Image 1 (cartoon, rainbow, N blue to C red):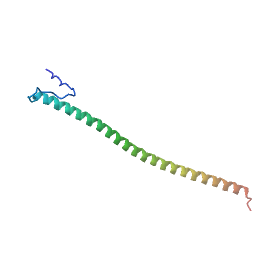
Image 2 (image 1 turned 90 degrees about the vertical axis):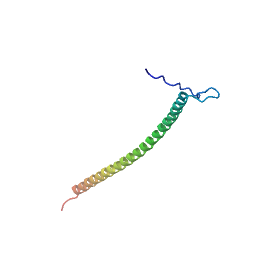
Image 3 (image 1 turned 180 degrees about the vertical axis):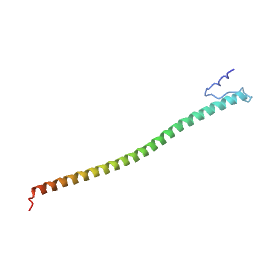
Image 4 (image 1 turned 45 degrees about the horizontal axis):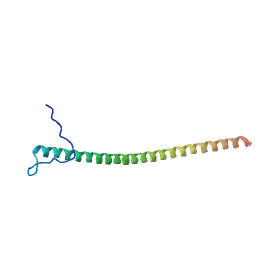
Length: 102
């Protein structure tokens, strides 16, 4: 037979006046308190994990952007150097072609 789940009302079990709560009532109370604590912890853990993931992701993205920017800058510098060198070589070739040889 399948056990019947304990009721999950928020009220604590009430014993008759002058009697101690039965073991079943204490067990039900213990389950409800444990469920509330676990629910509360789960919500906090979710928040903390989400925040840590965001922080870690932000750091990784910042590093990647920095690396990408440096690579782009090096590539642009190299391209500009090559363009200037080519333009200078072309101008020198033009000047040589225009200068009569003696």
